[in-house]
Amino acid sequence: MAKTARQDDETRLTARLRERTATKDAPETDPALRSLRKRLKRIQRKRRRLELRKRHAMGKKAKARRQRPSRPRPRPKRPLMCKPHPRQR
Image 1 (cartoon, rainbow, N blue to C red):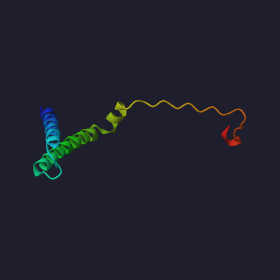
Image 2 (cartoon, rainbow, N blue to C red; image 1 turned 180 degrees about the vertical axis):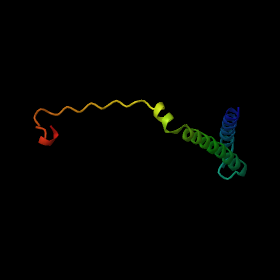
Image 3 (cartoon, rainbow, N blue to C red; image 1 turned 45 degrees about the vertical axis):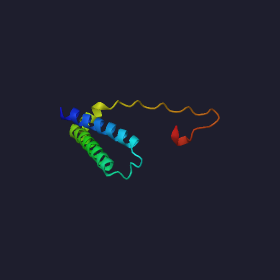
Image 4 (cartoon, rainbow, N blue to C red; image 1 turned 90 degrees about the horizontal axis):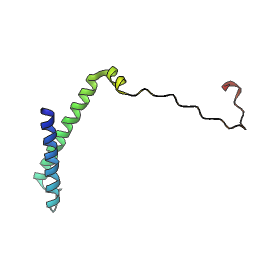
Protein backbone atom coordinates (compact mmCIF):
# COMPACT_ATOMS: atom_id res chain seq x y z
CA MET A 1 0.00 0.00 0.00
CA ALA A 2 2.72 2.46 0.95
CA LYS A 3 4.71 1.72 -2.18
CA THR A 4 1.79 2.46 -4.50
CA ALA A 5 0.95 5.63 -2.57
CA ARG A 6 4.57 6.77 -2.89
CA GLN A 7 4.53 6.02 -6.61
CA ASP A 8 1.25 7.87 -6.97
CA ASP A 9 2.78 10.86 -5.19
CA GLU A 10 5.76 10.71 -7.49
CA THR A 11 3.67 10.60 -10.67
CA ARG A 12 1.40 13.34 -9.38
CA LEU A 13 4.35 15.57 -8.54
CA THR A 14 6.03 14.97 -11.91
CA ALA A 15 2.80 15.89 -13.69
CA ARG A 16 2.40 19.06 -11.61
CA LEU A 17 6.03 19.98 -12.19
CA ARG A 18 5.72 19.55 -15.97
CA GLU A 19 2.52 21.54 -16.06
CA ARG A 20 3.89 24.43 -14.02
CA THR A 21 7.22 24.64 -15.86
CA ALA A 22 5.34 24.88 -19.15
CA THR A 23 3.16 27.76 -17.95
CA LYS A 24 5.85 29.81 -16.13
CA ASP A 25 8.02 32.37 -17.89
CA ALA A 26 11.07 31.87 -15.66
CA PRO A 27 10.71 28.53 -13.83
CA GLU A 28 14.25 28.74 -12.37
CA THR A 29 13.38 31.72 -10.15
CA ASP A 30 9.97 30.58 -8.89
CA PRO A 31 10.23 29.52 -5.21
CA ALA A 32 7.01 27.46 -5.28
CA LEU A 33 8.30 25.51 -8.27
CA ARG A 34 11.63 25.01 -6.53
CA SER A 35 9.95 23.53 -3.46
CA LEU A 36 7.85 21.26 -5.68
CA ARG A 37 11.01 20.03 -7.40
CA LYS A 38 12.65 19.44 -4.00
CA ARG A 39 9.66 17.38 -2.83
CA LEU A 40 9.85 15.27 -5.97
CA LYS A 41 13.58 14.65 -5.51
CA ARG A 42 13.00 13.72 -1.85
CA ILE A 43 10.41 11.11 -2.84
CA GLN A 44 12.73 9.74 -5.55
CA ARG A 45 15.58 9.43 -3.04
CA LYS A 46 13.29 7.55 -0.64
CA ARG A 47 12.27 5.13 -3.39
CA ARG A 48 15.88 4.49 -4.42
CA ARG A 49 16.96 4.00 -0.79
CA LEU A 50 14.20 1.46 -0.24
CA GLU A 51 15.12 -0.47 -3.40
CA LEU A 52 18.78 -0.54 -2.41
CA ARG A 53 17.92 -1.67 1.13
CA LYS A 54 15.81 -4.53 -0.25
CA ARG A 55 18.57 -5.55 -2.66
CA HIS A 56 21.13 -5.66 0.15
CA ALA A 57 18.73 -7.60 2.37
CA MET A 58 18.38 -10.32 -0.26
CA GLY A 59 22.05 -11.16 0.10
CA LYS A 60 24.54 -12.71 -2.27
CA LYS A 61 22.68 -16.00 -2.66
CA ALA A 62 19.58 -14.33 -4.03
CA LYS A 63 21.69 -12.24 -6.38
CA ALA A 64 23.43 -15.34 -7.71
CA ARG A 65 20.11 -17.11 -8.17
CA ARG A 66 18.69 -14.10 -9.99
CA GLN A 67 21.57 -13.79 -12.48
CA ARG A 68 21.79 -16.02 -15.52
CA PRO A 69 24.63 -18.52 -15.62
CA SER A 70 27.22 -17.24 -18.04
CA ARG A 71 28.22 -19.37 -21.00
CA PRO A 72 31.91 -19.83 -21.76
CA ARG A 73 33.02 -17.77 -24.70
CA PRO A 74 34.17 -19.65 -27.77
CA ARG A 75 37.85 -19.20 -28.48
CA PRO A 76 38.60 -17.20 -31.62
CA LYS A 77 39.97 -19.15 -34.56
CA ARG A 78 43.61 -18.50 -35.31
CA PRO A 79 44.65 -17.66 -38.83
CA LEU A 80 46.33 -20.56 -40.61
CA MET A 81 49.47 -18.64 -41.52
CA CYS A 82 50.44 -17.96 -37.88
CA LYS A 83 52.12 -20.59 -35.77
CA PRO A 84 51.09 -20.70 -32.11
CA HIS A 85 53.72 -19.93 -29.56
CA PRO A 86 55.28 -23.13 -28.10
CA ARG A 87 54.02 -22.31 -24.60
CA GLN A 88 50.45 -21.84 -25.77
CA ARG A 89 50.02 -25.30 -27.29
